[in-house]
Image (tube, rainbow, N blue to C red; front, side):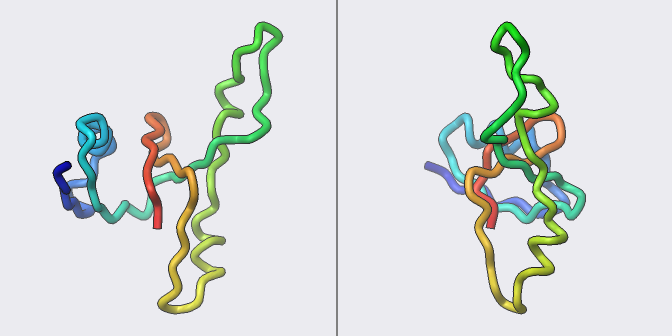
Amino acid sequence: NDLCIRDLGYFHLKDLQYIQDKEAYYISRIKSNTRIYQKNPNPDYFQDGRIKKGTEYIQIDMETVMNSLQPGQTCEIADAYVGMIDKVPARVI
């Protein structure tokens, strides 16, 4: 139950996944170009039942989210995943 604190200079998704795999916790600011996703509730499927890869996640428009907030206001993104290729589950606030 360790807690690792990371900052922008040390932010790497594989490190965060490793921490999570060890059932530890982390706090980190994310880089502004990091993509944040949620699972698509209605993905497209192939005829054999497999999910079409490009439809499994929906990218969240963080600029729109940030512009909707008042100064000092926070927002939690439920069931979030970070990373363009390796989608790492994370609590995003």
